Each structure stands twice: as structure tokens, then as C-alpha cells.
Image (cartoon, rainbow, N blue to C red):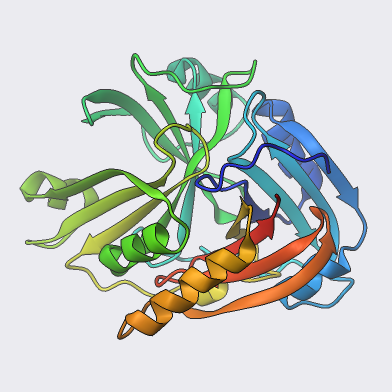
Length: 320
């Protein structure tokens, strides 16, 4: 794969495990207009071992980016025997990788064309304001139980394909403790907290379905100067949430992980070790893993795996 300029504060790809690669490419490449950077049909023993499955478990992959963007893309993977969907039966507040955001141009036209193609949204388009920007938003239950969130910012349009879709400015993951997530993402990965909001009150409780006194803590991490590849970490306060992160591993279907390109894997691992030593509990869900040099779809490079306190898997790939 030809080297891309690597922004260490933006994830390069979100890994999405699919049951049907043709269907997935029909949605992400043909309908949404993402460019296929790499397509690999056949096994990938290096990546399979990194994910803890048999050498022949992976049978098809593709890396896709929104035209004009270098990161914040989608890594589609199909396993020989796909597992159950990570979010099968999940409630909106359960702890799990939840959604992929999709920036759109003319959201009402995109809504109409997707409906005419047979897709069924959860509701009509809603409007809210955050950080002084008016945003139109609507949710679509996508294939493999992945929630797709279509957004259009008024007066602040994000880059999109000629078809009017931009994937993926950010993904959404649910956390039990956003303060621990903040410490991890800032001190280990060096990400910026680009946005922070806490929503509470009767209107929020009614809209989201929270009990009295419940609240919503929403933080976005990434690069303030780059539109794609951010992580939105959401904590629902006042509710009992099932921990579904253990489901998010190969060969399950749905959102499994994110991959960051970094210039020095060893330096990130050193920061992770320092956090583990300094934190009393919960610094990371699991100990960091240094995989050494791996040959895979991404080429030959040193790779490592971190796990956030909530349980989000983060694969690091060294690209100097």
C-alpha cells in the first residue's frame, strides 16, 4: 500500500467486519462514493494472528477512504465463518462500539434516496445545536447491526464524495467512565479533546430515555485541525449498561477496532506503560501487546495493540 501522510491524532481506519463483502462495497463504495485504496481477496495470516484467529480465517478485505481525505476511512473485512453481530440485542446505552458517523451534503435528498433504495431510518431528520453550529441528524440501522449516523452541519460543511457522502468523520463508542477515557487518549495517544458537553435535565431524560437525574457526558478526541478520524466517547449516567466490549473481537460482525498510523510504536507503548504504573485501577482494559513486525494488508510494519479503559481495541501501525 503506498504511504499516506500519517496524522497520529486521527485514526486511519475503523475495522468493520461484514457478512457480505459485495453488499458492503455496494453501500460504502458505490452508494457513498468511497475510494477503494486496497482490495485483497484471500487469506491474511499476519492480520489473522494479530486478531487471534486461524491463519485462513480472513478471506476478503478492502480499505476505503472518502475522496480527498487521507484518514478516517473504513477497513472492511470478511471472515470465512462470520460470527454474530457485536450489537445484536444491544440497548442504546450498552457499553460497545456503537456508530459510524457519515457527513452528508443535502441531508434531505440523501434521506429520500436511501429510503427509495429500501433503507429504513429510525426516525425523521432531527435538528440540534452544538458548539454554536446547527446540525441535522438522522440514524439508520445498517448491515451487521452497525448504526449509521448521517449529519449535516449548517454553514460548516465537511468533505464529501461526489455522491454527497463523507465517511467517517468519527465513530461513536460507549464508556462507563469518560474521565478515564480522557486520561488514556490524551496521555497515551496524544489526542486533543476537541469537544466536551454534558447534557442533563428533564428534556434530555425524556429524549434519551434516562431515569430522573440521569445525564449524558460526550467527549470527542482527535485533531482539532483535521475533520476525519475522531473518536466520540459517550457515557450515560444513571443507567445500568451491559458491557458488550468482549463481543467486539474477530470473527464477530460489526465494529471491531480502530487503526492508528504512528511514527514510533515504542514511544506509544512507553507512555502506555507509564500510565499503567501511575494509575491505581482501570488505566487500560488489557495490557498493551507488541506484535513486532507484521506483514498484512497494510504492508510490512511494526504493530501493537492497546485497549482503552472502556474496552475499545486500538491497533497501532508504525509508519515513519
